[in-house]
Image (cartoon, rainbow, N blue to C red; front, side, top):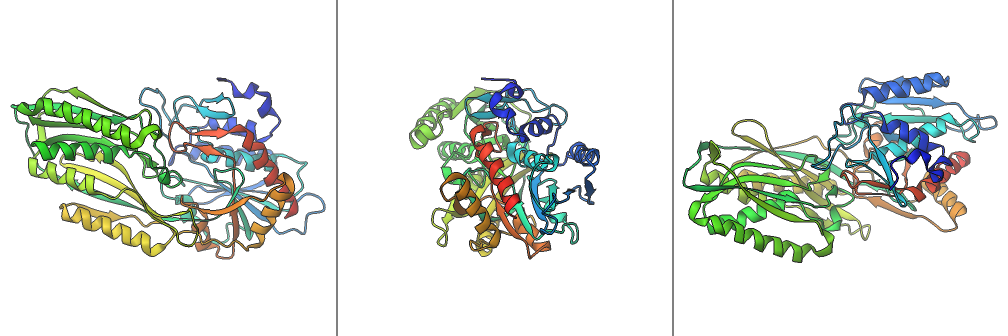
Length: 487
């Protein structure tokens, strides 16, 4: 495994790699992209390129057409600045100040115990390489760098009319080599507030911590159809099993972090009557065996661990502990339905994303609903609301974002498909994606845009297992530059 990728001869031939390394050195968590915004503006000014920034932080850099292409219409290249910041429990890393440390393992680049940020750093690197290379053949190019895509598509929401001039847009935020994406799901996050009453923790109880860990996690859109375990739901399943055997009280529950990441770990501190102490361990062993049988090689590192704990000061009263456990266990999760229009495409899904304390007597459950059918997305959100209302919890829904309706006959899709076939000898797969892309929101402000999305292969995005397949980056670059030349 190489820890100094810049010395790798396979990477030096592709001009975008040096820009990717530069981006890795700049912290860019969602909501913390100011330093990167300034770096992009400086990059443009040093090269004499026109640049501007809007009120939400989106940056646009324009490069004029090369000689002979002056009459071409401008084309927009687009990627987002921010990255999902996830790390392994034993990794020491401060995403606000520490650089990402890429390493190479065979044909894959990943990071040292954290997310890599190839989503969407490799797209930004491609834009910068286009802007920097004077030998490329192309018409006028606009490179749009949007902010805070990962936490609510804020940059796309904030885009105003008149900021862009082009009518064709290439989104560089896809993750499968050999595929062109022409549509995406819409999404909506929901927040469930569990307000609870506490009492002094009974002294005749056995207190313990249970942790679910070792799951793969992944992107709550792209990976939701993989059947991976959701740590919040698996922990709720164990607690619900225990609840049917004895009285259970909760002191704490914590799981997951981000709405667009399938939770990999969850933990709780609970108590049962001391006479049931052994039952806690027995049911844990049964649950571990059941989950190993159900998930098999899909989750080879899945584990449930149990440790005894000292008596906490307070616990949630039994009735409310039971309501919380029951509601969390009953919450829908995973694929809800498949598309009838596009075989193989997930139509509607839900991710039970996180459970966090929000101060004394208040826990917050966050979910993420996605669908390529707007009515299905709304119906699932209302179903979720009905469930948690029955459990006495407050439910609110975010504004959400629209999907992007596929148009396989678009002029841009046809051009890119032809370029791909001419370059590589076979036709690309043209499909829609269950994940959310900013393209749907762009259409709200620029309804005439003709769009397509493509990128190199990535796996495990939104988790510390995120990795970028090196051998797919050069074809990605070739397709992008050939498309610009043909446009």
